[in-house]
Structures are given as structure tokens and as C-alpha cells.
Length: 268
Ligand code: PLP
Image (cartoon, rainbow, N blue to C red):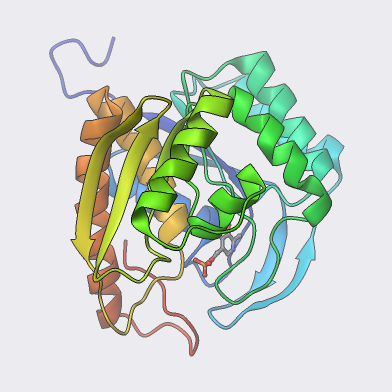
């Protein structure tokens, strides 16, 4: 085997998500994050999104049968170490991805429950929210931001850190899934994220809140980094301890990019 005595084989990480032609979010961000974290990135496209740093213009969804063909083409050829899901858009896509996860049982599944872009454009049809809740059954780690966690629980969004942790614990207990609760939408000076299971908080990491933030694609990038680093390090805590400072650096470095007139992308 190539790993015997030599360098470890990079984890094979499959992103199942939508596109961002400006490269800042979605599948393009995932591939850059996976590479930056030492993985080998693969990508199955759920939806083609005509968007830029300012907003979404339109969404094109290929036939579900073609989504299945993409998934099978990868799954029948490559041993997948981890899957990361992003924009799933509608109930048909969610059902197809759920089937794929059931058929192939990848060792690690991270779900970024993408619902609404920073620009306010919807990336998940409202009638598909229940499908996202049911998909949690096939997921090891879910990475909701404040509004997404509220939707998954069908509660009002948390207004503070303690409330956020309580919600994450309720979701973990109800779904059996580890939750990475992300505090970026709260107003605290530092941005805290916590790994939470049904028993409570397992690890909290913090980074300074940067002003003038280049944050387009942060959620996508963090979940892809978590999937990759979980395979490399064998534990969620270590994955988070490496992913969080890496993402903070990528947000800071985004200041040196000159990409578009809207919310700028992170620099991978
Ligand atoms: N576009 C796609 C295809 C995404 O998957 C995501 C991720 O959540 C976004 C856009 C969101 O971008 P933003 O970070 O600007 O909210």
C-alpha cells in the first residue's frame, strides 16, 4: 500500500453541493478547502447557480437521474473517505443523496445545512426543510449557523451563546448527530464555535471577529475542512482545533484578494 512507510495517502473527500462561478462559495470553495487541509477533493454538482459576490441570479437543477449517475460514477470507482454535503436545494435532491449515503455508507459524513445565502437568496426550497431534518439520520456531524439551527429545530433563532448551546444539545439529542454550533451570527466580540453532543459541549474554539469581513464561503469552507481533518486526525476535537484557526487565517487573507463588489470571498 502507498502508505506503508511513506507519507499518508491524502483523504478522498467528496463534496456534494452547488456551484459558485466566482469561486468563493459552494463546491469551488469546498475543493479549495479540502486541498488546503491536505485532502484530495472530488465534487458532485447538485445545482448550477448563476451567482457572484453580490447575489444569486438563477439556479439550474439537472435531472435527478443525472445526479445519481454522477454519484455512482464516483462511488463505483473511488473509495470515499468522507462526504461533505452543501446546497441540496429540493426534496428530490435530498432523497437521492440520502439513497447514495445509505448504499455506500461513507465512513464520515458532514452536512452543512445550507438554506439561505448571505445575500438573502434561498438555496433550499422551504418545503425541503423536513427532508434536511430527516437526512440528519445519515450524518456524523452537522454544521448549522444560528438561523439554520433554528430551522432544523423549528424554533426561533438563538439570541445568545447559552441559548445556542441549548439548541445544539437538543438537536444532537433528537438526531443522534454531533453538532458544530457556529456563533458567527451572534453579536459577541469573539466568534465562538462549539462541538455539542446530547450530553453537552465537547469543545469550544474561539477566534477574533474581523471587521470588514471577507466571509463569502466561510460555512462551506469550514465544513469541508472539518470532513478532511477528521479523516486525517481521527477525532472531531482535533479537526476543529485545526480547522478554526485555518478558517480565521483564510478570512483575514481574504483582505488581500480583489474579487467582486459584494461580500468578498475567503482566501484558501
Ligand atoms: N452558494 C452556494 C452554492 C453555497 O453552497 C453557499 C453556502 O452556503 C453559498 C452560496 C453561501 O454563500 P455565503 O457564504 O455568501 O452565504
